[in-house]
Image (cartoon, rainbow, N blue to C red):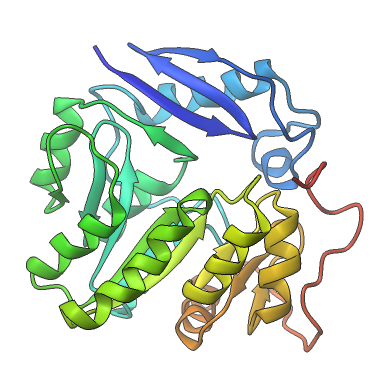
Amino acid sequence: MSEHLLEVAGARVRVRDGKVEVLTEPAIRSCPLRQDLYGIKVESKETVKRVLEEHMAELGMYGPKRVLELEDKAVSFGASEILSDALTEGLIDAAVLVSEGAGTVVAAKPAVLQAIGAHMTGLIRTEPIEEIQLGLEERGCILIDRQGTVDQVLGFERAVEAGYSRIAVSLAGHRADDARALRKRESALGARATILAVHTTGISESEAQVLAECCDLVWSCASRAVREVAGGKALIQIGIAIPVFALTPMGKRLILNRAMHFSGQLVLHRAGLPVTPEGKQPEPLV
């Protein structure tokens, strides 16, 4: 018996004992990524519920039969895809991310990282699921506690204690202060944090400023502020519908490493950033 609170397409969603309840209307009317992945042209409570239930059926999300190793990379330049390839190439030693049923987790195996993050979106709060916790630990993961706490700064500290020194940390855009805190902890702990900001829809301009100053990679999602603030400071942008902005040489390296692993065709060209053509963005930007 467990309850989890998350956001999908700007809608607040509760998953309680395996049942999905969409509590609010989506803030986003249309999303190019979700249209490409799931065929959704117009978002609604029904589309949010349908996709989440599909993930639960296919991957066991939010339940005791959770898939905890995954090779498939559904998103061309998603956070889990980029980090899985970075682990494979030795650019990072471990990643701190969030899993339903476990909270903050330190993972060091590419397939486990991909399973956790491939379809995870906007997890706000989670409660323990013993089978997920035990399964992650069997696969070498570190949990910060058994209560499902989400604390990425503490996760970074636990990763350092475990002997890792090149550690990626993903965090939600509204937790921008965590990015600043991580930068302060780096020197004291003698370890490098590679910070990735995801789920940025709806964040403020001041939060976007902090992310642009402190993060290596920032996903734009449906955020107007990220496009305007981080886009102009980026060293490289990948994607035009949901741009991902690299703000440091390390962020740039992670994107280019993913490009090396990506089997599809790509185009690279010089441009002023951001490149966000009308008609290709989520609607509305918030």
